[in-house]
Image (cartoon, rainbow, N blue to C red; front, side, top):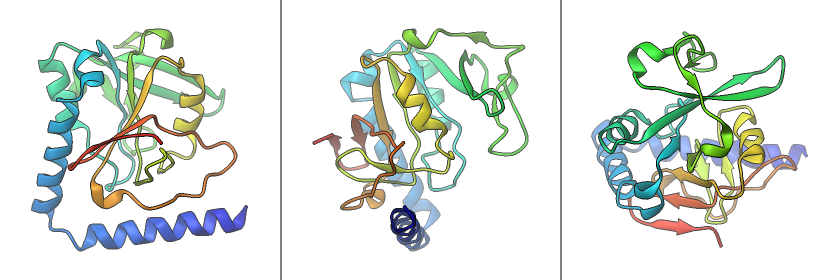
Length: 196
């Protein structure tokens, strides 16, 4: 197990080096290309209810632009709320990210249950899944402490699980831990990768 964790740590370190070699302008331009590709991707275009996430690591795709464009396309935007003590996940429709998201730290941030309407998990058409690194088989490394692995295990089989990332964050192989889950599709600044 430690060997898997050590390999995953080395991959994150490699991605950090790749990121630090890019300027902020380059990162912004590459991310825009990835988001443009997402909005040309039929599964996302046709989805009515989209599950997004709030990034916990600067290398995870910033979803502010995805959220704004999803509203423009009349999509229902949903965010998960994780309750670590009860080990539950609830999903809430977020109509205004400025007033419907609470929490100070990246780990605490999430939809405000007092202001947002709960959405049944079975209604989610597509789920964007965070990641610092991915491989072409849909393996990922993220900063979510395994919460999205649990979430993916609960989502219906019909819900497409999509990673949006930069080509620079694709690596040849990510060793998976026993509880890890795979995304179905990756959308990068250069291509769409269907899990093989």
